[in-house]
Length: 398
Image (cartoon, rainbow, N blue to C red; front, side, top):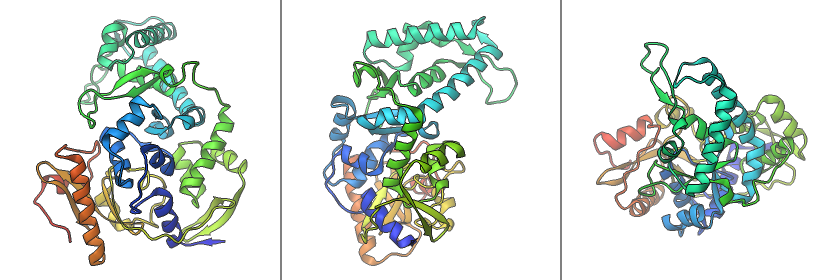
């Protein structure tokens, strides 16, 4: 069976709600894209706002911090995501557990081989004791920042000392590494930030807030099969390489997960691919959409040529492969956008679009500017086009 790029874009539009103008809840948006990318706190909310005409910033905060139907998790590719609560144990076993093992091995190696202040004699015993103290301190506090936890548990301020004269080799506390490890192991969760909705100063809460009886345990191999199935539901048809890239799994784990599924081999325009048996190929057409930096749709595949021409990539991605804010029309990337202080959302088209498309894109820019209401939004990984729009001369929509 042959699946054309146009057919894949039609499925992207309907499945990912890109330019469809629907009224979706934050939970429904998350289900449509499987997982929101959560490295940038502001981007989490903008991913929902871009796909829903009715969801508000307050709705998103309620889902994440009050109703707790959505939860942040350090998972695929050691990246932060927001997933639906029922899916979190699957992601924990299928992706986070492997990340956690890597983080623990790395941290123990550093504690054993790098000079520290104060000196550590037994890395494993020291780490076990600090972990236990952090668990107890967080349960006692309810929620706490990393700084507050390091006050309650002074051992978190243990520092790795420089061993070279390199600029990047500086004194650094163990706090961030250890809290990331505990997060990947499913023992604590990033919750509401201190300050505004776009603040990066997050707090932590014990995982008991979501699962009072403890996080459900799932077999890792079975979990990987379920993650692969859910990914193919959302991102298929696609290539096996796309799945391996998104999950961060080894080739062996990826192949085993795919083999356990009822998949159908297909011929994509660019390469052989797979899709779940019974997958429907829609004939949807989409309108305009302004997706934020690190959005799960442009970050969902390794090969993006079927919706983003190679010529646009240098302007819209940074050197590490992180996508900036993108402008979409009918399932294709046609430009980028940025938030300029005092002016709101500015867009720039790098491909020709019909006049009605330009008008829709401008309306989307006005809508998102109204939601931001003057809030400055700067991606963690600036891209050339976004940075130029945000800081350079004003350039109107083409």
